Image (cartoon, rainbow, N blue to C red; front, top):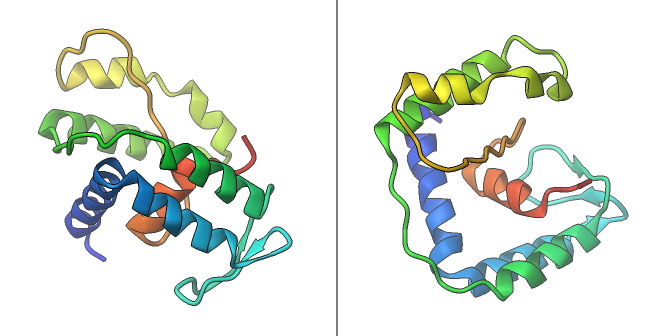
Length: 143
């Protein structure tokens, strides 16, 4: 999947959660039913997904998402997108995910514009589809 297409589909998936959290909770519960112990087996996954917490993490995430209010759509900001890509590029220099905490995200963000207040960043490594990026960020298996 081409980069821009993946980004657009990812944005659509995020907005899907924001606009219809109850439906997304059902999607998470459907995944929870596809566990064998801590292993998620879905037909659309080429490989199995080995998790730390198993179905319970998906059930907990579904319960949380189900109670969220409907939120407005978000749109891509070009400067924020450039900053995110620069941070992702920096991440490729590290072999271990925990080492990525040393990246100075604030300094990179300031190269692309000014921001007020605080910001947070979530990363997903290894998901092959926008749907699984969003689900993995919501479930946050092991945390």
